[in-house]
Length: 273
Image (cartoon, rainbow, N blue to C red):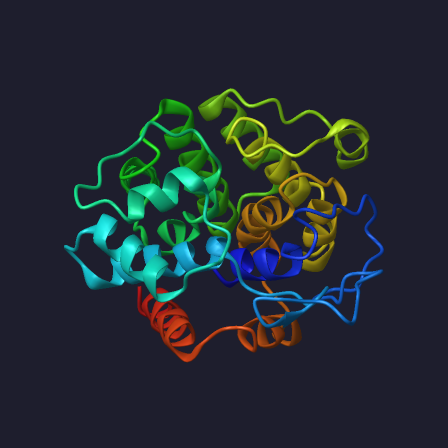
């Protein structure tokens, strides 16, 4: 799940300032940033963790806690880390007394799902847990499918399947068109927060990559909802290529201690299981 966090952090400064090239400073600062401007105490152009990371860690914490209420867990982390770019519908949900799913098919279900694929014991459980992780908010069929397709791709990669097999399996499961290339996507892609227009493109960015870093660069270069596209791509690329220690260490330097502790517990769980 560190792969999703890395994608989020690297993509954080490009979400509303897309850069349609793979040539950019990894972990920032964003080119042409204004050194005299700051946002929420952060220098302009400096990368940071967003809601993608917060909710990914929340899902991991939920899985490790056993029988726990995911809705409460998501809300708790949202209140602990406010002002991280939460969507309006999600923010309203988190602040409600009676939290009911709101039929979303946004890409939030896919951006937070990666811990599921590392926690599950088999493919059936991957799909079950992916649905559960999505359905508390994103109970629309496309929202659930986006989470399941992402988790399935991660699971297949971590169990040794190659890009061609992953492409075939995800296409068969989700009916996504994964035939385009990154170069072709980059020509037309625009900002979109739905699973339908985020998950397939993010998967392609991972499957076409030659390394973990190359996958993240692919994701940022197509534009759109950059932090979330890169988070989804990074979650798959981690399972395909592993994550270089230097990149993982740099990402962790952006995280608070409680998130690092949950990451470490998840890593220990994966090693033991």
